[in-house]
Amino acid sequence: MRKILAMILVLALALGLTCACGEGLVGGWQAAEDSAVTEELQAVFDKGLEGLVGVGYTPVAYLGSQVVAGTNHAFLCQAVTVVPDAVPRWTVVFLYEDLQGNVSLMNIADFDFGALCTYGAEN
Image 1 (cartoon, rainbow, N blue to C red):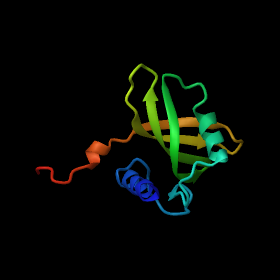
Image 2 (image 1 turned 180 degrees about the vertical axis):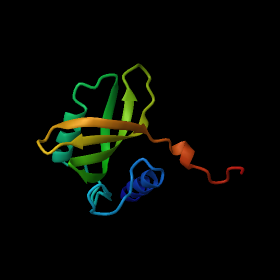
Image 3 (image 1 turned 180 degrees about the horizontal axis):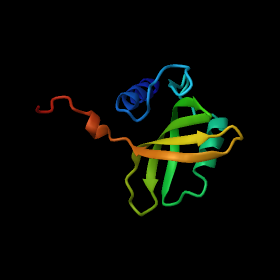
Image 4 (image 1 turned 90 degrees about the vertical axis):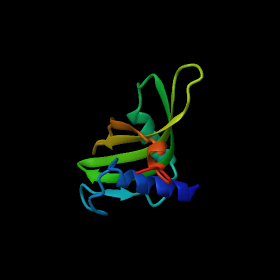
């Protein structure tokens, strides 16, 4: 499972879902050393999506962070639209946590695994 999550992070970075500007630099994204969604990260996630309706997001992996005037966070999530027989999909949820601990939603990007599977595709 960790290998799959690591591969997803690498693909997300390569596809430009995040800007890999340098490790440990202000403004650069840094991959998470551990993809586990801790209680602290879950609290940040819940605060950032508070009040969002229509789709349920479940974080399955913490992808990384970006130090700015605060911290940007990236979570790999399973998303399910709140309708009967909804099909789950994968998304990357980006949150901003300011220096006072306030959290806001920056972006939700659909993660299309099918677009990544090009093995054997005709050129």
